[in-house]
Image (cartoon, rainbow, N blue to C red):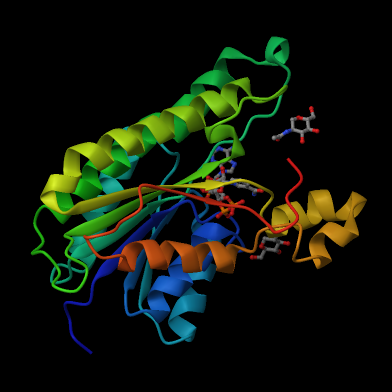
Length: 256
Ligand SMILES: NC(=O)c1ccc[n+]([C@@H]2O[C@H](COP(=O)([O-])OP(=O)(O)OC[C@H]3O[C@@H](n4cnc5c(N)ncnc54)[C@H](OP(=O)(O)O)[C@@H]3O)[C@@H](O)[C@H]2O)c1
Ligand SMILES: *[C@@H]1O[C@H](CO)[C@@H](O)[C@H](O)[C@H]1NC(C)=O
Ligand SMILES: CC(=O)N[C@H]1CO[C@H](CO)[C@@H](O)[C@@H]1O
């Protein structure tokens, strides 16, 4: 196996049952080495071990929190872990959700949403783009690298309890659109995915599945992390003559 296999860096792996982990596995199957960044070292190791057991190459880079210096340090560790491999794909999947009526929000919650959803994403984008700038243009895709951000319904629409979360996701979307414009001319592809519905993860299975077991079973009403991951790989493989800035994904029976 070539030592210069491309690397995917994904930040936000959660419990290993959501979009971040599914994306890591999907890219691993497509020949990428995967660098996993998240806060829980144990969950990260479990996810990395799973990918290695499936024949892939994965390593974990835990952070104590999603902030600017931690993300930069994690990228530096990724580079020294696989010095001969180019970082060619990066997925910012971490998201801090706060769902509270406006008057109940604390300053700490507002800051935490902004720090995770925006400030840390700036660090992730900066580190990704600096890494991509070292790459040759890939002949097939015509790109030096692809940077994908995970958005949500709240990227476009505020709602009754989303002031802090939507402010964060709106900011993330604005960042991705600006980067798409600024770095397209350097053959760096920046994309944003609006996940417009509930994703089936261990967490949502537990919280939502309890009151609504049909939601878990019915593939028409919720998104599968594996299906989102396939769309991310599709974005990564798009060639330069037709690439997407923004994709929105929703289940077939979406109701809003
Ligand atoms: N679940 C949904 O229904 C849904 C719907 C639309 C959009 N999204 C978005 O999709 C992305 C992936 O979510 P997922 O549900 O598939 O799970 P996931 O891939 O397992 O990732 C969840 C991410 O959110 C982070 N996170 C959760 N609570 C946090 C908090 N309080 N502070 C900071 N970070 C926190 C986790 O951090 P650690 O890995 O460090 O634990 C993890 O990075 C997120 O950006 C989310 O906003 C989710
Ligand atoms: C907005 O919030 C209400 C509950 O307050 C909910 O029923 C509805 O589905 C939400 N809409 C969207 C688009 O999330
Ligand atoms: C919601 C939750 O924490 N779900 C699972 C996360 O993953 C561990 C094992 O890695 C499970 O024990 C949890 O049930």
